[in-house]
Image (cartoon, rainbow, N blue to C red; front, side, top):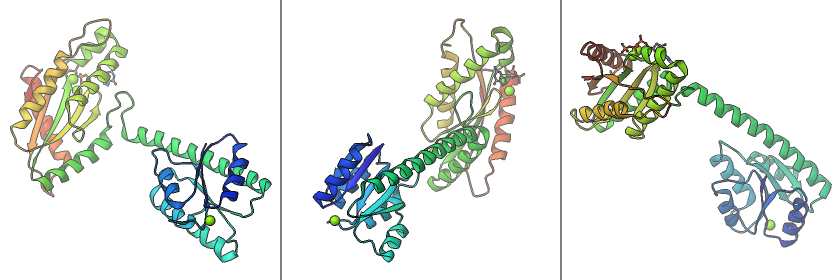
Length: 299
Ligand code: GH3
Ligand code: MG
Ligand code: MG
Ligand code: MG
């Protein structure tokens, strides 16, 4: 566990650090508020922080407030260590966001008990954060391909609609469907079919810009959305995607030829634009692309 001690008083600093050394944590010791903030702002913030109240620069209670405003996703456990231990003062520290309070001079047994509480709370918090991350992943991303699922895709397209309105740009919305995917499954087997879906997603994602939208719309259909400065940029974009897939070397034992049909709708978004309408138009174009012999783009 990464632990920070901030105290301008040398004796308190030494007492606290020599006690904590016995607990096998990664200890960072600082002498004032600004040094403490520098450690707190490192990419990996300390999980447990002991702050003296009165320090030059920023005091411990002010630091606590800053921590509570800024480190929201993974909040550290903060203990104020001070001889300002009147009831009102302890209440003030807790109100600023401290989790606990230790009175100076520090009592070793008391510190040990409070350290154990901090460890327990941090473990529970860690578990919750990890579970939350996992649920978020399941809620927004397609498990097989790792691209956004349909629900997240719709939200992302709405965001792109807003971006296009702001920048006065066009939005291309496309449905990409793998040609004769049923044959691929029948001939090579379902697990190989899955690998095709994964690899295709990876390759298509790589041809797009970070803010373009790619989501798995259904089985072997993908939804793509991209803001464009000019209408005719669409041709280049989707041709790049079509040919990338066609040229894709499948990383498996057998050579599998994969082609796609793409139906595109180009639209100048307004506040009335509806994702579902755009997809419907893209779907009609896709139907035409299939009818025209597949491995084609129809706008
Ligand atoms: P078309 O060129 O007209 O699109 O023909 P198609 O065979 O691709 O179209 P069809 O809709 O008949 O078949 C889609 C197939 O995609 C059927 C389904 O079993 C398969 N599929 C859907 N989801 C998955 C998946 O997650 N993994 C695998 N391996 N196959 C899937
Ligand atoms: Mg002090
Ligand atoms: Mg299909
Ligand atoms: Mg298909």
